[in-house]
Image 1 (cartoon, rainbow, N blue to C red):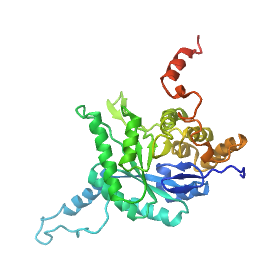
Image 2: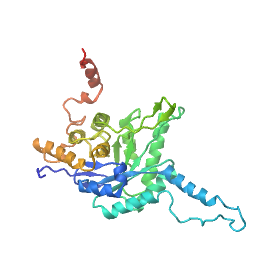
Image 3: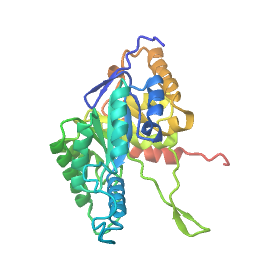
Image 4: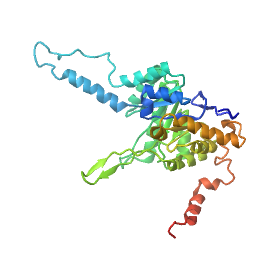
Length: 338
């Protein structure tokens, strides 16, 4: 579709054909599906996260198996199998996916890392860089379950992590964070100063439920809905133009309208997972066409021109992002039964 509207954008030092990027999900964890996403027009992809705990667990499992018969007989004092000192346990499958994606796809590949220790973050960040990742997304999924851990201690942990990764790698990286900070704007500035090239808002923390029959905690996965995007819309609108960091919007991006809204408040890219899982890779093309048409019909020239035109800094009534909008919404609401 030719409209004359320029959809190109820039994110993490990468020139992208448009700002709708398939984010980390089971779709991006399969090379065949990655090819389908490219055919649907994906400008880049974010691979699923490499989990440090998973790598360690798999490596320990292999060594436990090898050591099981160690010392059982004089004929096999070291066990029945050779030590796999040079064999890459745990991360091998992920690194194979990254290598295949870099070799077979014509678009940038962003690796994702979810660590559990400072050493793990830096080690695997370097490994992913060396395997050819164009950029990295740090998926920081930390639940401050310790009631004795202060908010300042949580922030300090994040900042130390970002600084350590910045010192370890040269490729650009974004930090995917949750919304649960007492002063998110201030903390966003600190993350940028610590070395983050981008922020992805927001990490969606999955909430537990209870199974009343078995009395166990359930781990159900509920996919996002379009209404879930409003939290990111508010904070991207509040941060755009005020922070030296690129902004990615994620969670609740399902349609072209969702993409348009995020760009207008200041996002550099939007990221989709749930909508693609629900509708298939081809849905990406429809979303891009819908967003492009919206801008073209209103005589916008480019994403660069449109980006941030309705941010907190530029909108005619900035109170819409703040507490005043909350009060108006409550007082003006009329239930259907009334």
